[in-house]
Image (cartoon, rainbow, N blue to C red; front, side):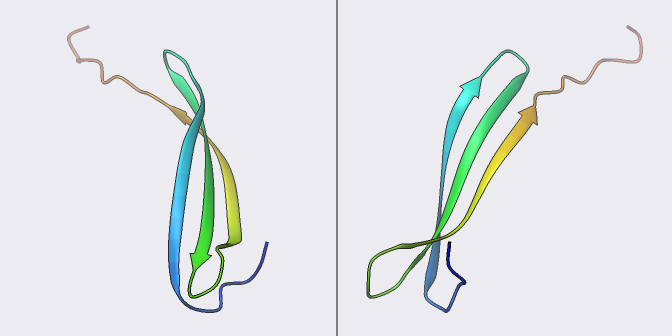
Length: 57
């Protein structure tokens, strides 16, 4: 990991595991300028799909 010093940022995400209601996603953030890409941040995210239920049942 390196601090951001300028240039553009690129985020790439990949689904690691996807189920019926929960998904795990890996995200990598890189700085892009004249040289090679430099990794500046990573995240592992858990997301849950929620279905809205009507008040009538």
